[in-house]
Figure 1 (cartoon, helix red, strand yellow):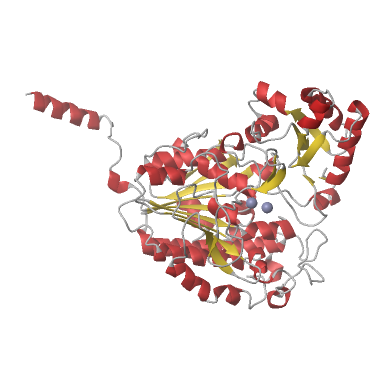
Figure 2 (tube, helix red, strand yellow; figure 1 turned 135 degrees about the vertical axis):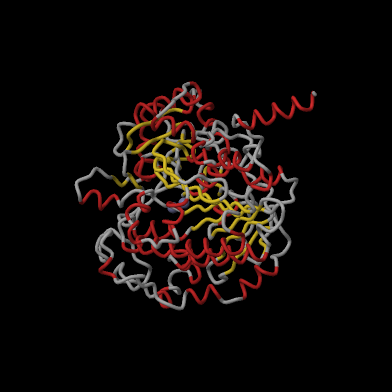
Length: 545
Ligand code: ZN
Ligand code: ZN
């Protein structure tokens, strides 16, 4: 009798729609995280008509697109972006506060993934002496390995070391990045392995890198059809060394010598194709998606960022780079359908930050935009401390719009560091180019819940960051007059695409505001595993089946 009641109540619960956790067979065989370096959201819409049916459009039509996804911290740089996507939290927690930053304990500038405890794997350069040790938290990729008792595989691939290393966390089987110069090889670090696997060595020996540099960069379609961009020859674009104009065709075979030999491959769309080739080789070589566990491949396309920096968002070069990347994506999707199986894998695609329109171009249109001279700023800061505290030695370092005070000096002069910091804030906003300033003390004692000060707070790490934070006006860069950059919390830097696609993902779009840190908890929920250990993002319920 009891059994019958149990059965009846169980079927009643099922009838009501209570379902046990989805069956384990339904989990994806492979998750592929795709990060496109410096991709603005509007590259999806501006070039939409020119994309093929099987690349971006396929992801948009069959997947779920977030139209108002934003970065929610400062600074919007590559290392920070990749760390935030995969840890599901911001720099105040994960500890990757920039690409390079002033380490106040070591009293020198450091690079986010440098680690001299490890050696290069793949060649004799020092380009492989890297690890993720500065990232203090776990990633979604770590959690997946932990959840499956290290039986699954996690692999990271990107031309940039930081874009390969940070996504795959502390437990990765491998991370690979590209050593250009005269080497032209994919390498790794002894943090992961003692030698490259055979498939990777074979790839390096295949001559592919050279092949890609044997032809000029011409537009994919006729030049005059690029009506979504400015004219090819304009004063807002940077030139390759040895070029007279920033125009097509870019004669790569001739230019490579003056532009770092294999390094030029990073800076042209072929760098993305080359990355996709290596990713496919990794899937085959490592049998990704073929076991009973869920594997993870983190791919980052870095060449988009190099092209963006040099030519800017409104260049034909950027349009052409995205049209070509679309083809690479289409190829990759076809490959995944064949090798892993349709609906057997899950993809998310996003960017590590976006970028501003070239400020000199904005100025030509009478839109406020600025170039800030950092050397002048440093001089002005010294004048302030001289005027109020009779010393020009109170500031130890200025970098990433942060001022690090020399606390020993301040103490030795009988001054109070908070008084110095507050005075700097009062005075520095009077300087040209500086729009806002906040002391570290304020960020420690006040909670900002929205806007740019909330972004500043999310990027402020109590242990690692400086003593005074500066915020420039919108559309401010510190570089020359051509090309672009990124780093701010203004929407041109923060608005990025997020598209989910494949196993477990609904079809649809949302105009709700989501943050970059929401990807990791959403993927954790899809995989039914724990979130990374400091996650502050939320699960985006509407994208999940
Ligand atoms: Zn980047
Ligand atoms: Zn960049």
